[in-house]
Image (cartoon, rainbow, N blue to C red; front, side):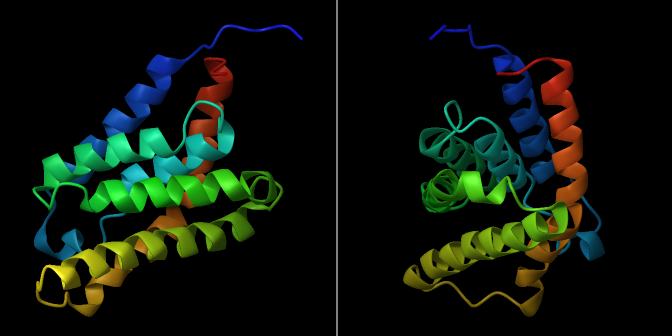
Length: 162
C-alpha cells in the first residue's frame, strides 16, 4: 500500500468559493426564484468524487458559511448540508454507477431533501410558509447537474485532484 499525497485542495476550495459567490450574486426579481443551490451541487459532486476528503464536516462548514452569507438562522443550512453529505457518503458507490440522467433524478431528491429540512426549520421558528416557487431551485439544479458534473470532473482530472 502506497500513500500518495493529497493534491488539488485549492481546486476544491475554489469550487466552493465560486459556488458561494454564485449564491450571493444579485439577480433580477424574476430570476431569484430560479437560483439553483450551487453550494449543494458542488458539495454533492466532491462527496461523490472524493468521499475520503469531502464529507459531513465539509458539508457542515459550507452550511455555516451559507448561513452567514444569507443571514439565516445559524446552523439551518449546516444541518441540511451535513445530512446531505452523509446520505451521499452512504450511497456514493451506487450513485457513481448511475448514468447522468439517473444521477440527475437522485440529485433532485437530495436537493428536495435539503429544501424540506430548511422548511422544517422555518416552521419550527414560526416563519411564514414560502410560496410555491420555493421548490423551483431543486428542479433547476437537477437540470444543471450534468453540466456541473462534467465541468467539475474535467477540472478534477486536469489538475489531478486526489
